Image (cartoon, rainbow, N blue to C red; front, side, top):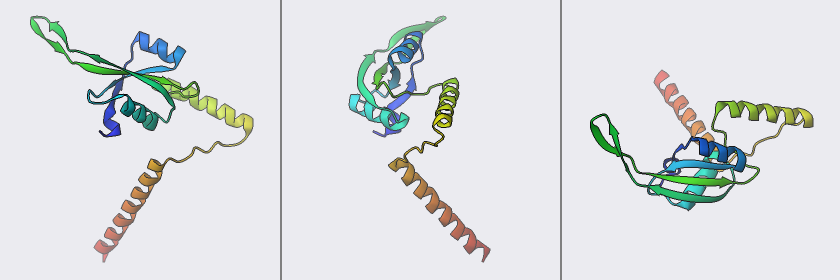
Length: 145
């Protein structure tokens, strides 16, 4: 399964927010075909964090009514992801601003810029973009002649 298809969306409830802020535990709705290993790899790859453990819960479909119409709510699979103490996932724009300010303050104190290591996926993507730009330039030169 493709890494981008594993995690569907985060669960944003009061209970999950308390766990996220106090215990560094995040809850996601994941694809029904995934397992713990795939969820761990996906979270580590997408959010660039260190995952300690993953718990998975299957929920069956639930009967629901809207007026006189009856039906079912979809069945889902939840993954509860426990992160390392140093890791953090930014889910909201406010948190991103705070993290950026904290990083700038830290850089101002040390007076050095921290260079983030470039991952293999980012290098491959940059190479593909460069090749596509070169191919486009060659194609436009041929059309001009």
